[in-house]
Image 1 (cartoon, rainbow, N blue to C red):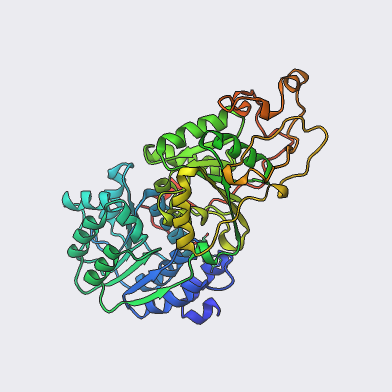
Image 2 (tube, rainbow, N blue to C red):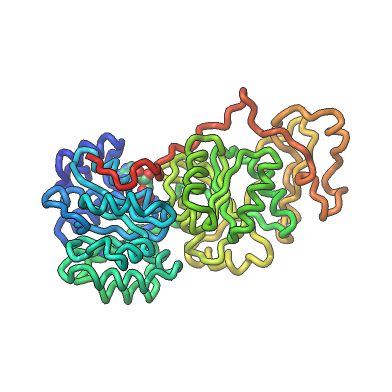
Length: 462
Ligand code: AMP
């Protein structure tokens, strides 16, 4: 199928062509005609499947006809996090560049003044997180009764974040006669109930789970004792041809500590988690976009759905508690046809969580193949840490690592085989290192950032 077969306008087809897309993804091929027919829609689809364009493209054509009015947005897209809201806004800019449509972004953590000003000028599409939208609605700054197209994106994440009552409230304020599109990676009972209550005769479509169907992601696990996790991670970062990586941890404190530790060890890393203010999150993401850092340590909420092209690796420093998060996390790599790798560190306490992942994805995550890493070299005097768990004891990894820089003689002298070290004092954490990448040793191609830019808050995009 071609985009031209979907009945999109010429202006939109031009924008799609400029975006470099050759053909619609399965979710786009299925969803776009339904949206054009003004049907309600339940779409089970992950990020990474092209789902954003599956609602943004037809919305642009629908909104191309009609007039905007002050404080009365014509359509509303609800997103669970600021980052996702900004990403969808950027998609609107990209695909709507040949249209004269106004967009406003209502997200927490940024000044309300500009947002209110944009609303006053009239917007065709409002992209919002539920909290900020409720806030402005309750202050009387926004009227929802002119909004007859609603998108609830990442509904299962909305549920995780406790937004369902807000969404119900918002749905009740919208005109009863409207089109509602609901996107979710999974369909837990509360989302099903939400859909039953607020959607009318919806068409249901489902595209293959990214995690199970995405053959472009090679998934591995490394069974390891908790105190060896940092060492194993650093080792893997060095030997597995990592160009750009996102490392997920379950707790914000771990994100902070791990980033600090990686930086101390000479890695060019940054962090993103829910405790950071919006400006810092944007700044950190921007560094990642520019390639100034090539490793981003992240929490689930902050990094959910981020679309960053060219991420070579996803590491689960902690096995996620919720199997869905595993699917979302690894979906940050292997995007848009590229190859990616995901490596999950599994401690004995994580065994059950991994089993849940395997149940959900209906596949066994194989053990990391240590023989696949760079071959040993004579001058690699530094042995690797021992990233082996109880069940991998026989699989002795090679004691080698690729050469990053010449070891100083005294440093080499300090190095003794790892097994002689007490477990409590992993040498990789004590050692002083220069930054991994030198000027003549570029960090590989950083991810083509396709994510949020602060400049477009409340700005039209014609
Ligand atoms: P999403 O699932 O919406 O997060 O999109 C995942 C990525 O796929 C984004 O980087 C999009 O720019 C890209 N994309 C969306 N549609 C297509 C398409 N038809 N062909 C190639 N890439 C696409």
